[in-house]
Image 1 (tube, helix red, strand yellow):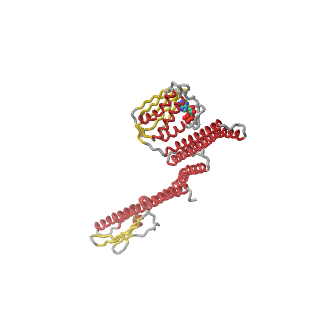
Image 2 (cartoon, helix red, strand yellow):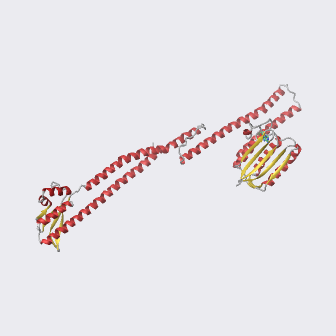
Image 3 (cartoon, protein in one colour):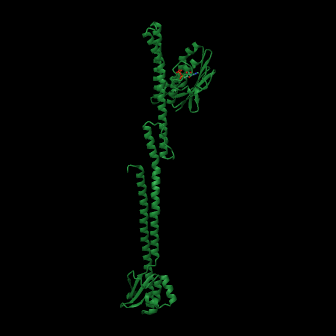
Length: 448
Ligand code: ADP
């Protein structure tokens, strides 16, 4: 159970809530302690006021004057003190009860209501405070602190507030913790089940992305990875079925011919053997093409990039081709600025050679092929254009597909290889063509 992430989150959040509520408890204790100390200090002050006045009265009359000290007893009561004034011999001179009973009923009622004093009240003991005049003890003031009720109200309120915090806020914290931990862990659970589905072969499995947080980004990356896997898987299946299809036709033809020879239906002459030999040559070419394509696919990982002076580089390739173009009666034009390109020379020359071979194949006598290269923004562009037969509009989207051939002949792998090599250089390739008029292939390689 504890292995579950959401339980861990829940425990964490509940722990934080408990700490927060405990700190409220501690805070309450500290506040009440402070409040009590403040009240005690305040009462002590009141005792000293009363003592000072009693001593003043004694000094004035040089003896205990009962009526005058009775006024002090009433005043003390209104300050929240029940008192007893004793002379040096310990006889009670005046106490609160006596002073209050001597008052008129109206004043008595008022004083009682202000002081909260009841005769029966007996919760505290009296504290003695000696009374002095000029260094001589003249008696004792005994004081009992009356609870005014304010302290009780404060404590009751803070208890109520604390109970509210514990139940309402604590409850809210628990509910929020559950919701929040579920909200946090639900997308992870979805990711786990999607990853499990992918591992079981369901490459169509995707995760719903609801947030843009780190888990959202992880889900997005997972979806991208699953999509890539799906594309790769479908390409792999397509490639295998394409290869099987491409191999089946020549092998069937050869088998048929060989069968005929074995059965004696076809004479085994040199011409027949020559045709069979040529057929194996075509098969070898096909396998070489497939090998070249798989190498091109892997080339992103093994690029040996160099800074190449593009003009001289292209010139060398064109010179190698010029005889073929001349023989076919096609003009070959070349135009290039002084630019440097960072590329793998072998791969780059394969790109140019494949495009030039296609242009040569597609262009008839008296046509022309142009190679133009230069710098454009942050890219190097290389364009191979011809005035050849062009590509039908409906065929254009498929020209980079493996084994696609607009016309019979060829392997249909040249442009697929070019595309892989351009991709390996983080570049792109574009094609424009008008059927019957000509074609332009443009390769863009970023400058880095
Ligand atoms: P291949 O290796 O057989 O030449 P590619 O992949 O290079 O095949 O080309 C795919 C198809 O695209 C070819 O069958 C061809 O019909 C068409 N194609 C390629 N380049 C040109 C071009 N410059 N002009 C017209 N058609 C072209």
